Length: 446
Image (cartoon, rainbow, N blue to C red):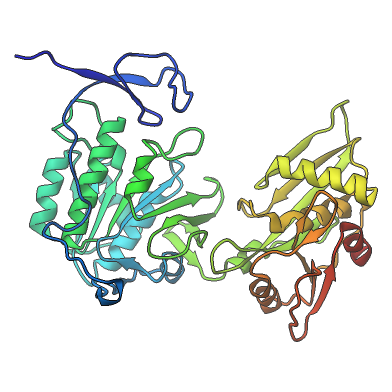
């Protein structure tokens, strides 16, 4: 017998080396390289087998373009109109957030029109049946298959030919072709490739549940997110009622879309109007302002809160929840130099209510006005929304989707908007105030 060859694979990023190293040169993590057998790489095309046709783009037919509803209108909209045949969706989130509950409810809704195969590598069939009973799910078309062997799962999928496949979770499944344990980089990559190829060939949409690391990123190699068609992030506090499904990647629709759900004793219930949810408990106090946020095609009204209090220590605190602290430091420096709003001797806290994370620069002006409101202890009019990017010279820059943001604000009764002066939009029944500098915005509000 020939000598068995081994390699060392980083369990964080998938980097391979012929020798062990304490620190991965690719991702910089320590003690993540583990020894695995060197086996021939599997070659998967991720497309249906057979000879491919070479045709102009105008002559290609839209094959399998019909969408399959998940049973939740908001989730369908977030996915771009529903599931596409052969689409592989990776959904990830904190343990106990409700991923399995949501997928079991989606499986029940799709089982009314076809056969659904729910493969579980984390729970027994009895455990899943108990949850299904609690959720009021009782369908003969919903098949539960507790299994972690990839080859057996593949055989069952080919035999049953379901209309939907759910794999919970991809980190618990292993292939007999590899010697490494389940959850390793090579196993996760192999399982995802094989399942994706099978779904593309048979035209079956699939949900793959992905575990996450303690840093909050999806466990496994980065290639995992590249293989699948759609990546959903399940966010929200475990002890809060509300959950947010956010689209991180989508080959069949836009990214940044969200779907909001409420956790009840009967499972997850969709919230059709996210804006109403996020501003339903808006604080009527200084330091609070409404910001029309958008990443996808649908805007969402969010409440941005700020608290400015005298610092207890020599170095003042700068803390944020749902907002970039580096961006906050920039805004505070601009306010001090351009508007004479001094916070160098104060602790500044910024929070985006509802558990959402805002990264777009359009929130700059809203954060700045919330800080000024708390500093001056003057309330911003409750019927006012604020958005705009703030530059280092204090200028207020235009942002995208201004018309969509204003229409959403008017829909929920807001009658005044503080926007960049470059926005030339007239909304009936709404006072749109254009400002070109943060000092003008402060004068207009206070």
